[in-house]
Length: 293
Image 1: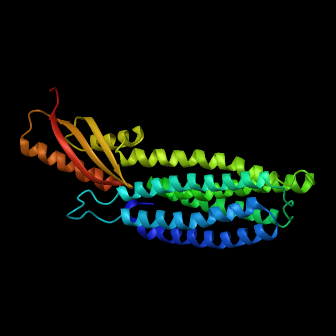
Image 2: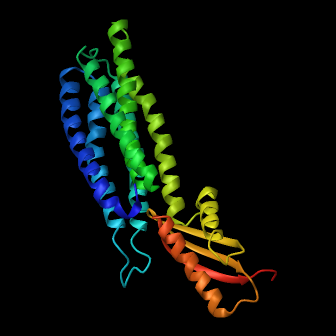
């Protein structure tokens, strides 16, 4: 998936995410209330929060793709990182809500979940994991923290549903005394959600603060630059990630005996080659340095 074609390719995926969350929210809350399963109701609550967070994530992602203007010469890519930050925070909030209510249910005796809640949870696990993988694939292809965060919202839903399914199975098989197994399962699943929420937050903050990109990206850019005619080698390479786009500052070494005009042309050749070779690269600043100095 090319970064510059992203709006057309991921918009449908965002609509699909929201629609699936709405359907699952209604199914899980209704079945959970009728079937005496708080773990299933908790899943429904998380799906309700996922609707809101998915809307924020996908709207933020689309806004981050707006081109540069007079007031924002570097574009609007940081909105994508802010959307990723929101995804991480909302994951932590969802875990807190589920954890709190799970503890409340553990303290209060209640009926064992109905058997029909189990196949519903299994269906939820399959649907949400498939959706998570599709969104995560788009997030990886575009190196988008926001989309990866949204993918983990779907995966956290699959995890809590899977944990609830295990808990309900224990409650149904164990009988009296095991009625709260699904609540314990929901509580354990919260730990996984918290861990991934923290990871998403960490990456979003890293991007917002212009942290280093991976060494693989750095090497890739330097290799592309070194392939341009007239470039003898490269030295300093700084890359700033803004949304799904990269802004590059590169020091290029050339023959010290060529003219200023020739050095200037090589710099432009490097810039044009990098931008045409990698759709993630939005702009390149080259510094021409003489070899041996």
